[in-house]
Image (cartoon, rainbow, N blue to C red; front, side, top):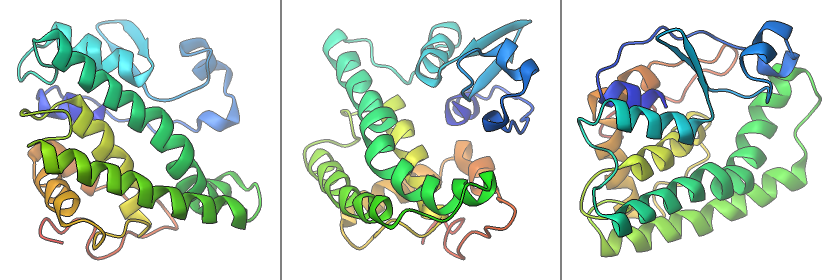
Length: 206
């Protein structure tokens, strides 16, 4: 969502939300108890995919969803792949175990989950490599929400050095292109207290 907003040059104020605390005010804004939540024009919007498509309809330039129905389907399929499958199999097992558990005070990482995430990311990187062998961008000839969905997951994992960039030159080059975009600047400036980023994280040339 942040990448979509930045790409469309929509300025927002970022507010840290400890969603796991179950704050009553936050739950009034989103009963699902999830982030992100966007407040715009006095309205509250929730669920990242729905928000991104809303932004696409309201602020169509630059276009992040193609006009062709088949191409739009492919973008949506890959957004779902990274937001759901990749997130569940990789991000939840690596980032949530290594970082979120410490922030939440919920104990030590579960070794089996970390091992599963480390194994799963290899499959996903190989799949991305296959996509990029056949396309200019993940979903086709134009950059789209699919690229942002994938880059968001990989950015979070790169922050904790859990991406083997030597596994695929195509994926590494694609990610270098993505994080070189102005929309990525605020992401690369993020700093999680107690978890300093590696020196390469904000380096556009790795």
